[in-house]
Length: 448
Image (cartoon, rainbow, N blue to C red; front, side, top):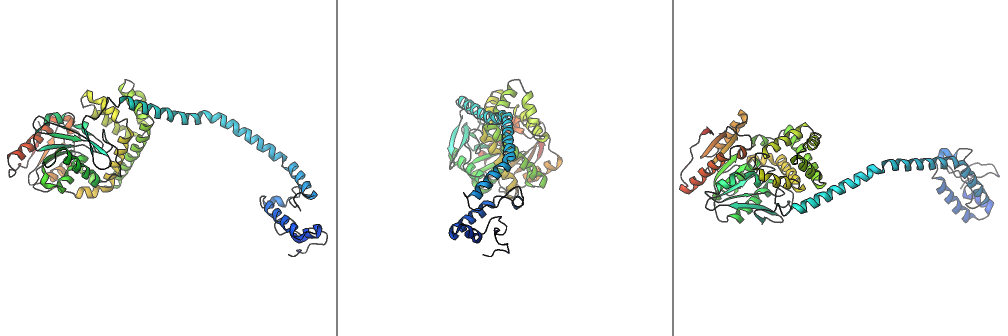
């Protein structure tokens, strides 16, 4: 190593390090190998400090041998130099301590409140489990169980398929009336009401396959009249396309045909719905949903309504509308429905169904039942003309199709005019019993 042109008697510095080179150190100590090791340690030490500090006159970084008199002098000078910094560091630490003291209550609340919510949700669910026991049977469909409840006797068997986030409870008024003239079953798709959460990611094929397994369990080797509301109308159409020999008729209750054309705006709405469903899952886990529903039904609706408004005007309007529809059910169903929607799995199932509709709308719309199967399409009276026209065209795909307008109904026709649904189902059942060759006259009429 060169001396870099330093005059005799001065330290030869390693370039950029501020430390003597091993050659200079060996002149003073006489131990070349030891000096080279000490010089290497010095370089490593100097790398911890900015180069600008190494050039400062009042901050002597140049040291020779660690433990030497020169090094000890440097250490004393460095401590004296750094004393103000150490004092400042101590003040900062004390300040941070004061900040922590001021915010410890907030951190504590963030930890304690969710814990209390989890405990509240767990205890309340355990206490109400016996009062909300499944009224029907749990059917294994491959990894999870679906709840189905059947009533009545006779055939063909009627199967009631619910809307996108609805359950068998949505047929509470209709099912007992149909049971008076034939066997009728309603079931809950995965994650909804009394059914288990799905053990796999949802797809439309999975949903239709699970309907097939439910039908094979409740009425093996039988024929069916299928009734589907909203999203459920697509499920029964897909089943009829796959198993045409098993189906004797379809009743499609206000099918949302407009959602089969997935525009960017509708896709954003579905994504927003999924986000709200995920938030609902978290709030249900922490007992917030249960607390809000308890206050709402206990005569203190102010706090829940303010909480819902915080989610945004669209979400608030949708939830208010759904609550209004649910109130049309018998009062003795309300506590059961409230308890079921306190469960996180219901919100998770709703998010999965919305995801299926967003991703598979085109393929769902491409499915069509055979034209020889009788179809009755029921439209809510508040549907716009273009929607009524789409429903009429859907009915015309069947050679035995009919379009019915429920003039006094909203989207939930089975709530507003349950007798209309019962009458149409009876007509298909009697048609199937009379003769497979008879047909239904295609017509459009309004319910009285």
